[in-house]
Amino acid sequence: MAYRVGIVDVAMTPGWESKENFLDQVFHTTKEVLDKAGIRREDVGTVISASSDVFHGGMSCANSYYWDAGGAFLKNGSRQDGESLFAFIYAVMRIMSGSFDTALVLGVCKGSENPDDDMVTYFYTDPFYQRQIGLNETIAAALQMREYMERYGVTEEQCAKVVVKNLKNALRNPYAHVKKKVEVEDVLESEPVLDPLKKMECAPKSEGIIAMLLAREDVAKKLTPKPVWFKGYGSSMDTFYLGDRDLLDTQLKNAARMAYNMAGIEDPMKDLDVIEMCEPYAFQELLWYEGLGLCDKGKGGEMIDSARTGMEGDTPVNPSGGVLATNPYVSRGLYRLAEAFLQVRGEAGQRQVDKKVNTALAHSTHGFAGQCHAVAIIGS
Amino acid sequence: MVSGKVEYTILKDEVAIPYELAMGPTWTRFFEGLKEEKIYATRCPRCNRVLVPARSYCPRCFVETDQWLEVSQEGTIVCWALTEYEYFAIPVKPPYIGALIKLDGTDTNFLHLIGGIDLSDPEYVRKTVKNGMKVKAVWNTEKKGTIMDIKYFEPVR
Image 1 (spheres, helix red, strand yellow):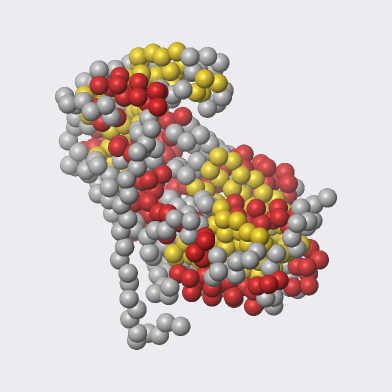
Image 2: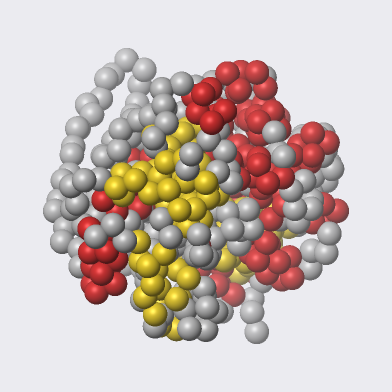
């Protein structure tokens, strides 16, 4: 039988550049979450971290380097390289199976130290074919945006509205990196870095060290009066080559279906109170609405027009400001989950949505044009 | 903790390390084909799709491909993006257009560049380049057995 898993607490750095040393940041963040829960590092069962060290950190196998700072030495543990929601589900399973009663999940990405993200994403290409043509993540996204606009008539204004909404939300988030009030015109007039993508439609490069403590139900109830429960999860990865895929039919629908089945979600717009989504490019939030089943195919643009995903809408999306405001690459899935956790707890401060949050969804994506998607659902 | 007055040092570091990557028989044959101005695909015996560039297996059916065929050098633009930013390490210099191109008779989209038009004015480019536009391969005179033996795809006039 599977044990029920609760999130006990979370600690994270803000998204802007810190002059603190990386190991000190990892130490302070880990210490903060353990102190909040009132436990010592010796009490932690297992540690699962997420980091993509070689290009994002300039060091290979850096988990062996930050392991001490994460309180993980002399312990069971493992590192996930890619996306931090995968580290979360790994930790959940270690508890569900009865192997451990607590698990610490770490996401470590000191974005201020690595070069431009696209210098790094250029090396996600295959070296024989794509690399010499000059593909990177932003070019892949621009190709996807062009297809989205042409096939479904989604407009540049509708894409720009995502930036306006999310950056407005970020103004109320003390952890957000980009804080700027913008209008649709500002977005449309920002530098056309990669036509049809404008500069303000692309996520920044942010700092993000995050630590989240999970526990088996009985332990979670002892460690906090307000545990937030794990409800469901799904993930799916599409084929590698862009040309082999329909860029508008992503695996998000598959990941969402698995998570919804597990969590008993029938109508996501009705059953989910808040959504934290990973939208490194503005138009992707609209496309992900479709993948999550919040609206029909091709209707993402109408969805943003309807304001149903705004702070006052029926299902607010990205009250934190999302990835367009704070983009700690590998850690961004855990940052979405942390915001979902705070919203369920009612502890999201000025950005708390104006209703009782029982169920929240956190989404992450990595790989070109949303090759891979993960969806986690948590609730009270 | 970091106080407002103290400036801490930043260490600048750079890493460059060489690799040797095995192309294997399939990439080797594909790139040898480009030297002869031929674009090769392979066909999946199960789903019958023509996969370009050629590959040794069909990821969808998970079986080995068994037939090589030369495919058309003409096709249509599926989607395109105009790059005006110079990215570190990318050998292609801006402005350039990356595109997915559906070569006639194939079932996957081929990634390459669009050229042969004036790229200096983005407005002109937007008016000129369209999804669904017919394009054809233009070859570099000097062949190196790489994907850039194709210079770019240009509009069919």
